[in-house]
Length: 319
Image (cartoon, rainbow, N blue to C red; front, side, top):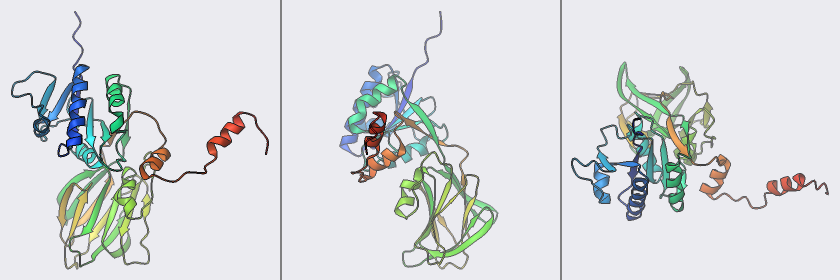
């Protein structure tokens, strides 16, 4: 007799502080388990959802802790919330590269693939394995003082070096590929990925970069300098920001708005392409242009492209 099929397992992460999210999360768990898919929840979220199976349970719902590699053995992570919830999921599952599928219950939700009204079709796609996963470039970030590494982490959206005190500028020298580029007195510097180009980078006046483009972005924040333009460099480049030793105050590093470390004068922040990408689930192959239009509500009235193509395909050559 052949071995039974391995158990399919999905990690469900939810922003359980909102009643609306809890309701959707419970519905997703119920639908997944009804289709024979085991669901893993973080223990505190299971308690918030009223789905804690209790100790020793062997049922379709299991619990784990954030520091127990929650994505291990899961075919994907279903994230219910906004982009912040997806960034949290990326942090929790970075070691396993488990694909992330976001259901947006936040605001813009650029990282999410589905909206609240798409929950049933999203569950159907999971059950049928009717999805693909695409790799998104990440950043490896390291903070050094002298030869000592104080802090290292990754980022999916951006690593931002910022002033710690509102009343003082931060004096930095920026570097690309081991060569000094410019010195700035500024509020900070954002180093971003194409995925993060629609996040902090966008708010700081940086370019929108299509996610399939492999590149690193650097954007100064309110720099007092003649040359202080957003820059796009190749994916093999190494960016560095040095906090000058003559700064009266300190700086702070934020990665994806979640992980932070204080930067003393003399600190050096190195940013390079991450060794491990984050994988985002795609349910359909809609062009990124359409996503921009939908998420930002961009005005496209008057566009004649589709009508012109229909006219040409119909053989109508009239002026």
